[in-house]
Length: 262
Ligand SMILES: [Zn+2]
Image 1 (cartoon, rainbow, N blue to C red):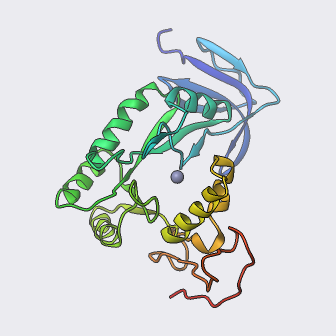
Image 2 (cartoon, rainbow, N blue to C red):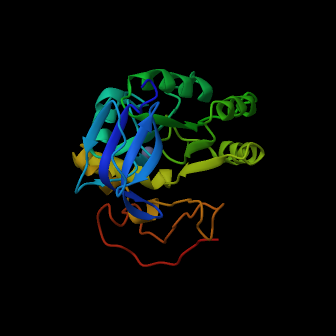
């Protein structure tokens, strides 16, 4: 009986992207080996879980989370143990974190390898996006190494001046390398001068807690770049005519203006 499956989840309502069916789920060597129609007898296994009346769905994938991220003087509170435990309680079985250089000395490759090491503490599956802050002649080689590690999506920030912000030349050069490597550029696209100015105005008025963060992101400061958009490949600046130095959404009235998108 050494080949009997380690686990059978019996009489489940299995929901997949192509539909739902009543089935017994047979697990061998940690993988789903078969779905047996529920009209058939329950296969013998080392362990059986009765899922009658329950839905069984594939684990969720959270494609964007920051675990133990260092930005300047700050670090997010959660570590891999707490993050992955919370994820699993919510049905998310894979998270994709970011390997972002913690300071000017840390290379993109080192940042990803550091996160890989931290991720050994995770209780759920982990994948990583890379990040580039500053271009230098080693970046193409580093991106190749990242690709060899399975990391082909690379994030760059247009804000967070002084910590994670990449300049336009860096973004363009990394994008060219990613074309060569069949990778994907991931742009955190916000207009840095607006964000910085808005943050400064709030700070002057004593609003510095995390609860005020969204107020430092007024609509004209935000942009996006997404795969599949008709304008994919461009950064949508969302620029509008403003009445300086007061920005809509920060304080004061919104001033209607003309769009300046290309
Ligand atoms: Zn993020």
